[in-house]
Structures are given as C-alpha cells and as structure tokens.
Length: 165
Image (cartoon, rainbow, N blue to C red; front, side, top):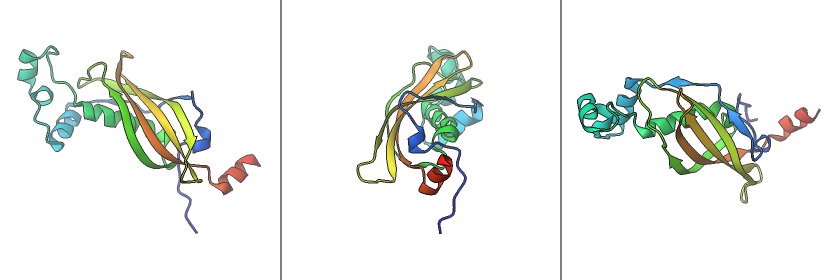
C-alpha cells in the first residue's frame, strides 16, 4: 500500500484559471546567495561578482543579482501553496522576463496566477497547469515573471471521497 505523504500544494482540481495565489514566504537576497549561485554555475560575469567593476563600468553602480538565482527563488517561493507534494514534474518554462534588476538586500515576495489548466491526454490521473509566477521587490516593483507548465496529480479517490463527506 502506498504511503500518503503530507502535502501543502493544491490538487489539479483545486487550480482554477484566473486564481491568483499570494505566497506567504518572502526572502531577502544576500551577497552570499549571489556569489554562490554565480560561481556554482561557472558564470564569469563581473557584473555579478566585482564591486569595483560594477561601480565604475555599469549603469547600476553595484553588482546585479544573478537572474537565474532570481528565477529559482521565485519558483521556490511559490511551491508551498501551489505544487508541494501534488506535482509530478515540471514540463517547462516560457516567457521568462526580468523587467527590473535585483540587488543584494532586496526582499522578494511573490504571487502566482493560474493561466491555463487541462486534463492530461495520456494520464487520466493528472492534469497540466500553466502558472504565471511573479516576483516583486520591497517597493512592489516587478523583478521577474515566468510561466511554468507542471504535470499535476488529480486528487486521490480516497481524499476526494472524504472531502465530499
């Protein structure tokens, strides 16, 4: 018998197109976050690592946070209220944009909108949901937007029956 694992995410049936889900988690980005992500991914861009270069040679005057860290943070913040324990797999990302820079010391908060949902054509126990994740800094400026397609579990029959009772 399969063990029922705890989850916080929503089942496929609980994700209606148009739902906007505010996320409780926030995160202040540190220099360690930026340096670790940049060096672990072998990114040699001085824009992320070199304070003197960023101050003298860029329009920002200070290092920018690696955009891949920003994207990863956005998705991570969204997991608890959307896909924690209820997703089968990420199917892909599309339309990823970074309309404003993120700097060390910025505090990121996020929301997710369900923009599409359909039953899986090959798996009767699953559906495909398109999420639009949006990250904002402490000034409510949009700093990242990304669409993510996820293969989601449908509510298990035993859980569905007890929810109807």
